[in-house]
Image (tube, rainbow, N blue to C red):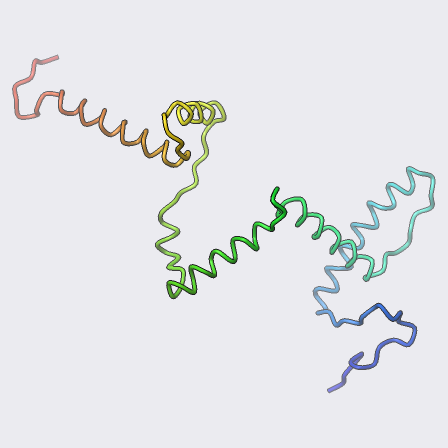
Length: 170
């Protein structure tokens, strides 16, 4: 069994660089990503009158991927208060996990459902929420509307004639 590259870094490697081993399939994916980045770079280079590049190095491709990931993390995951949403969520889940001996995910998953409503209906829902004399969440507003709707259905049902009673034919 050979130890290719292990404890034997290239002699021309810069001090602040590290050598890593990459799975062959990951390496091929990095090459594919590199080709895509190269095509984009060459489009802009040619539009600027510069000659196209022939090839990009794998370290450059990894650097671009790292930069893209960090930018996505900073723009999508960092809240206004400067804290990472995933860090906060993980801490909350870990507290629950450690204090209750697990998360009991089946029970958690069945409590909530995601629904989509038209933008106009959502704005109407927000108006109803604002009209309620106390501060309530949208979930509480929806639950309140469901209770009102159920009461209205029950009232309507009670006003309908009983099936056993005589009806006026149509």
